[in-house]
Image 1 (cartoon, rainbow, N blue to C red):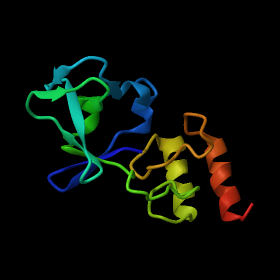
Image 2 (image 1 turned 180 degrees about the vertical axis):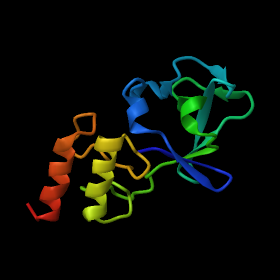
Image 3 (image 1 turned 90 degrees about the vertical axis):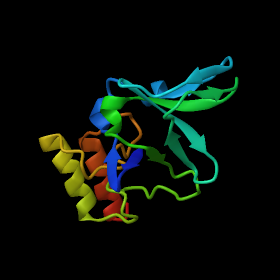
Image 4 (image 1 turned 135 degrees about the vertical axis):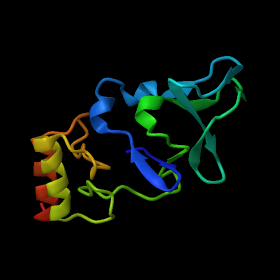
Length: 149
């Protein structure tokens, strides 16, 4: 999904928290010239075209009309200073739940850990069927990929 990095530590915006704050609310479109900044409750991230990532805005930053930026509750960013994307062309592998680049039983285990223990620590791409939430159907999708169906 979305990852951040702060002092060498990687953070993930937990899928379960997204259920109460849809991702569409994270991307803010600018309809008029405005100035934004991060504060104690909200972290704002500006797209960096060189790194293809979003860098945290730490001072007042001007955005022109037509631009978009990420606006995420600070409680969900885990102190991240950078939001890493896959805009550089790396594709998501269907069935790869943990983001290691291939599909294996480890991906199924990650889904079970989420469903049984609400543990999303190993989940990068849990919603395999695209319905907006992680369920037993996603486990079935991964099983079918492993079986070659």
